[in-house]
Length: 402
Image (cartoon, rainbow, N blue to C red; front, side):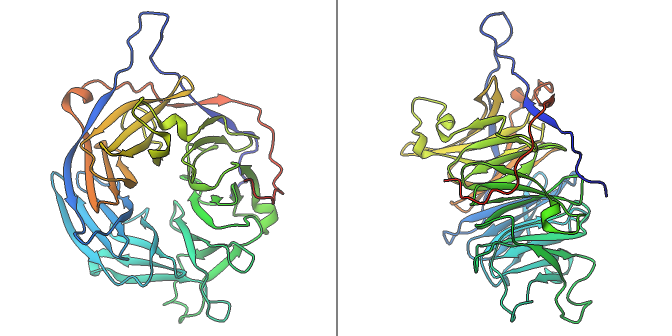
């Protein structure tokens, strides 16, 4: 596969409809209503993560709980529990459905093990990925992802023994095929100095991987290269601690940090071209920035344009809203009416526009637009390409940015 394109386009955010100096229509907030609410656990367990399939008309969602179980649902007009996977051996750090099958669920655990389970066979383990190359001691995982062609699985580790690792496995060679010999392809251990908190394979380029860490760096790798040094194509310094990352399009990334800031990056940019600190999440006088938090950035245009899901928690309740980047500021596009919990993760079914949230109350909420708000959607609000000439990054940073 060819290298990452060297001349990149920079993403920006198209300005919204609000204008103070003409007679154009002011963009108005709309509401998302919780059409379904389900208590997954009555034992005060948090729901830490959610994933789903884009199948239709029915789709599946998977939830990972703080008691190490995974609960799978089928979603249509109603929410139907299909299977509970209770044989995980350690805290879950991530879940993903197979890119090619709604019946295969990948689960990564903190004990260094990643499994693929067949939901048609009561969650039977059909593949297992782990690193047992050093005296059988597996490295604790903190993140993972699966490539778009499902050929590679990558796992990011905690900082151990002076190093933080990104490990790679080939899904075509499972332990069962290798008589329990290690099926580890290899790893990187020189590019991050702290926990690797987030991994994101490119959505269409199966050999491009981005990683984020508490050391503040976002690294982009070309996995076709023969060494880690040559594979490290870009290194971006967020000057914070990276929580989550994802791809906006071919050449651009979004990042949320542990200090609840949002950054949008051009891979060859020296600084983020969009950056909002936690104070920007306080969209009303009643909000205290210290009570505001970021859930996730969603790239899809299913709710008119990409949005940041954010919340605030105070004595009056749990607020939740979708925020658009408009005119270099965050503006509320949708209020989620009736939220009852601090939300930990979210997932969007693009065809139906169903936004699904999970959180510390052990609840699943499926949010949909009210009929009035869904009559007119302005599809022109979207992230668009903006040509830039950003300078290349020095990829030999090794100092902690904070």
